Image 1 (tube, helix red, strand yellow):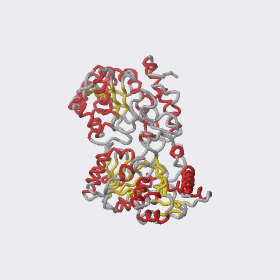
Image 2 (tube, rainbow, N blue to C red; image 1 turned 180 degrees about the vertical axis):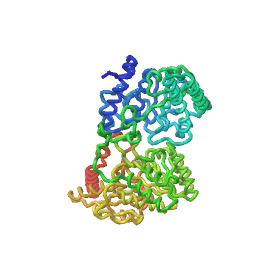
Image 3 (cartoon, helix red, strand yellow; image 1 turned 90 degrees about the horizontal axis):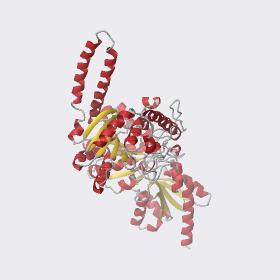
Image 4 (cartoon, rainbow, N blue to C red; image 1 turned 45 degrees about the vertical axis):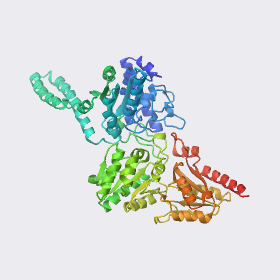
Length: 624
């Protein structure tokens, strides 16, 4: 294999060696992702582009910013991480995204779409103010560039009067198919490129034939007419914004890419280089099913089949079926997703009720305010968004839903720890950033049965309802599953202490209670069901028992469910009862399996039981 440990090594390769190296990069990426899981299709699509970028620019002196950065595997391999690449997404290993702690070549720890151009503009202006000469490059996909943040940055780029190169990686997809007017504009630009390619094919085919020259000229005139039609629109949107447009170019032709990037390097002002790539390039299964191989678990390399782990239906699958059921029962049910129809489970509803389902692209703020408008118009909107991405819509939730007192359902998927994608994707802040807003209820189902009941509850609500649930398989119902009555539920009686656990963490609390029973400690376990408002029955029971109260959650402890319980007990005149809140500490959590991370954070059943035992012993000593 060709050994590359830095962009300097890459620059020494001949054109043929670079082609060979591209093949070797693909083999390494496919093999590693097949074992570790990760983002495959997007990374396979940018191999040649990454080689060209690091051949033309001088990273880290020149700054290359990867939007989302899930497509930066080849970048990592080129920039000194080939020997550690086998640790991708493993505990203690390298991240699946760019990470400032790994390399000076990684400018930002990114994982959300749309931030690259704004960040690159900041770097460019900082360079200008310092008198620097380095080039700044933002690499962004065609799905991300349709986000509101990107439009804000592009609108400001010409006025900023700074040199900045934006490379638009156009593979027609982000995760699912792109939607919206901007996606259609890019389609027109791609069509121009395809027509030119067909022109060359026809010329070579007809030239040797009798009369081929005459026929060729006739067809050439027709094709040129089409080309002129679309050429008039080429890059017009970007040029109107004061941005020089170059393209579209073949994203898998290293020599062509090096030429255009070198030309862009010489230009001043804002420059957009439009390259067309194929998602999943070089691996048949990923080319045929790029959505399946966008983010994938470990799989069998020859067949492309995921190595299945026995598990019951996921929370997402249960939500998906329930949403369709609700739609069949009530024509007012309307679904919204922000570019994640498959990930959120909304695809089934879209297939059944296409006229009542809206994919707004990577535009979470718009999705939420759009839902507000639907609610105002008498619909029952269900906005399905990952917890980490809903952060981007905070003001829209506060101002456009809660202030208006509108009954929007926020289906918050991937709440809590998500595992191997790490700090950019953990959904640990939603309770804290929603709990203080008026006119919203927040619930956390512990299993699929409660999720279905809470969706029905939310559909009948008069204010906004956030239903938060984690990634992965939903736990089985309890042996004696209580019927949901709209209030908190006592799942285990006890006399020595009480623990209230949110969502599936209830099962951890029950397991800890069984462990403590063997230590002679009788722990009472409650499921609050609602994080907001907190149950009066739960409050009354805490005061009645008069024993230490613990809380357990898979979200941030600061401002989370535990904080709410502490505030409630203080208001009730029982501040001394709140012994401890188990939750995510005040730091960003790195990547690793959920089980591994819970152990590290002291949120496993064993850790919870041990800490409760210690705290109770301390309470007994303090009380004499």
